[in-house]
Image (cartoon, rainbow, N blue to C red; front, side):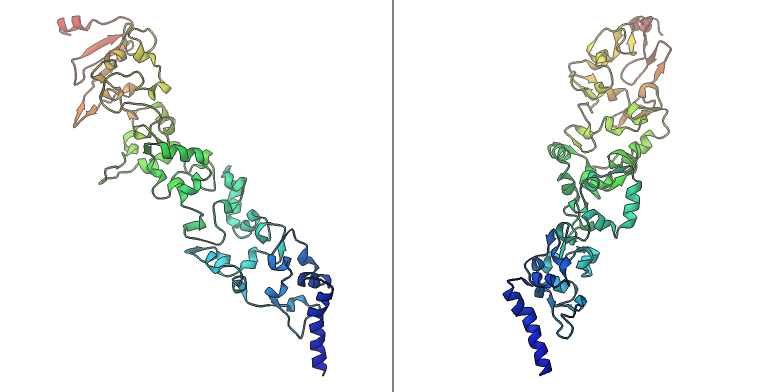
Length: 406
């Protein structure tokens, strides 16, 4: 009889009183001054908000309502309880976040309510840094921080529960970066020549740190050393093998200005270009070229365009015989104008003015230049003509020179 009376009281407490009071389960539980905190959140878990306490909890008849809320038992353990409503397939994948894989849903989420999105116990970034403390320490010391971290939060790039990609990434690396960096995406898609670094191995991360860096643009290394990570090694056997630029420039007496400054991107676009060799502007890569005044736009980003547009000059170039512009003489031809590479190395040389003493490649032959500089001019005896002289102050008549046997 005593047991029956106790059971009847429990039935009245949980079913009859709330009905007459027109209260939900949540209102009933909170109004007893036991669980008042449950309904005081900005963001509520739907069972708690709708008063469906028994969707997750069951009463232990012998102890509740004794005031001991901890004895209000769960209907299942860990993630099994959550999966009664949430589709398990949305939380299980090839790569899983530790708390999700171990079923520790409530480590990150408050099961009743929160002032944060997705019922998180803390704001998203703080929630992540609760575990990733080593990352946080490095982040605090970094000079440059990715705006996705500085201005947004981790879930802009990472999925919080599971992914089919390493590091819980939301999408393939390049696609993910392009979702914010639309200007780079547009350039890449329009480029006829794409930088291979963007679609092999680590893709964008080949050159950029994805979180923070000590260098502008989140670069992994400084200037030319970053480029030489790939362009500084021997590769053989493929049609697109890279030139070993480290061998080409190391130990040389004279470096092209941008190379000396470690500024490869002065000439090359690091993402893609519609010009050969991902150059930023037009530049003839052949030995001969019918003259086109616009074909050298890359060079004229630094050099004076007058060296090819003025036949006579006193100041546009030092390569002149009196006022006769010898650049104009060599380059401005209707059929076989000599391009820059006919005399100059592009990156580095042991010869002045980047004139290569070992010769300039012309098919399988290296055309010797045999250039000698003087204080006011010089001479050259290349493989394409006899020795010729020039002097800026006292013009040389090379026709007289040959007649005199000099």
